Amino acid sequence: MSKRILVIIFLLPTLCNAQLWTLDSCIQYAYAKNISIQQSDLNVQISEATEQNTLGNMLPSLNGQATHGYNWGQRIDPFTNQFATERIRSNNFGLSTNVTLFNGFTLLNTWKQSELNSEVSKWNYEKMRNDVALNVASAYLNVLLNRELLYIAQQNMEAAQRQVTRLEKLVTAGQLANGNLADAKAQLANDKSSMVSSENSYNLAKLALMQLLRLDPGQMESFELFVPELGEVSAQEIIANPEIVVQAALNNFPEVKGAATKLASADMGVKIAKGYQMPSLNASYSYGTGYSGASKVLSGSPALRLDTVGYTTNNDLVIIPGLDYDNNDYVLKPFERQMKDNVNQSLFFSLTIPIFNGFSTRTNIKRAELNQQLSALQLEQTKQNLEQSVYRSYADAQAALAAYNAAAESVLASETAFVYAESRYENGQTNIADYSDARTRVDRAKATLARSKYDFIFKLKVLEFYQGKSISLK
Image (cartoon, rainbow, N blue to C red; front, side):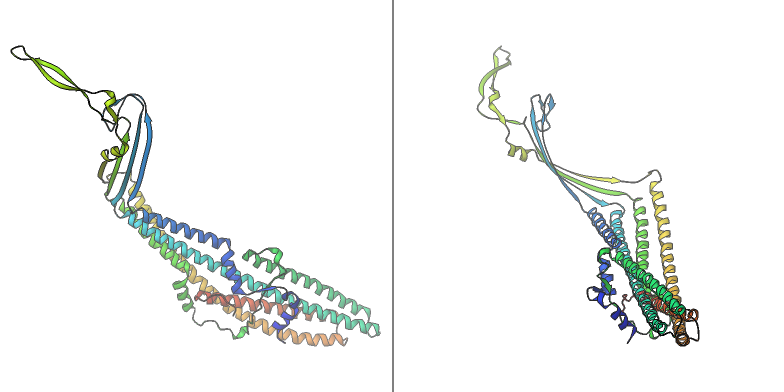
């Protein structure tokens, strides 16, 4: 019966009532629930909103305006150009638009830079997903390791219990002294303590994984992991050439792509800063109309009158006709007519030529160039760090495999020694101290083997991850 089957049988009562989580389901759940990923996703959305705003800045603006008000006291009415003293109602309606025709391509380059910044945010989001996946995989394997250590502690306690039962029969038959039985019971008590400690470590490992998944700690009893068939560790192969892994990581990892995109954004920043050295040309157009309560038109028939304007050389009167207008002959000019008659339009062009602005443009260019150099160094540093991480992971995987092979030999040797020590102890040829010492060496060797196995598996999965493969225990 394989060790995997024994582990499942040992935990069968719990597994029957539990939802089994695979590594893939844990990673996918963390993608949906992890706070850091959610924050990174919001940063992506903010960057996309900024990108849309910079695109809109290149388009003409269009605004409408309307006013409604009253005036008292003497003033010149803007629509009649006459003095008005009574209370006058006035309305204004208009549309205006502004457009930048040229400004050194700063608006265009700003939009391009915002596109690049949005891309940087997306690469940061992918990096965060990668980090979470690695953290979940590490925590998942740690749970499997502590599960196996718990199984080893359970097996030891059961072996100690069988030894106590056997010695009790021998003491009852008078074939063995009570001292040996007391030593065996002491060993059983120690194994029970180890069992409790292993169970606590197992629960803590599960709790750490649940915290990464943002699960309620109250679900501890029902939270169980699927135990995959990992196969023989010695059959696992490490890629022969780490350069292949390095090249794959440099081509695929979001850290490198994000740093390269950030450098492109810094290049665009230099163009933007230099654009402010060039003249800018803007155009504006407005269309408006209005209404005035002082605008009146003649209505009705005026009275005819004769006015004397002078005399001829013969002293004859010079009389001309005139019209007398009464206030009642004037009515307020209709609103619709005023809207039509008071239409006014304007079109303006403005040219701004930068001559001196307190060195701000020159300083901004210098700052942008320094930021460009800094981004270039950050890209090189990112590549260097990733390359070092790959080589370190490659060396760690090789060391973990060597440690596993050494631990496997140690388990085989210590088990052989324990079988011999157990036989001698049961035949009364040695004492409990020698038996316990042999047992302790077996326990340590098995624990070291388990740790080496999961350590190697994680290191191998990290190498595969650097190659662009998804993390999986299938």
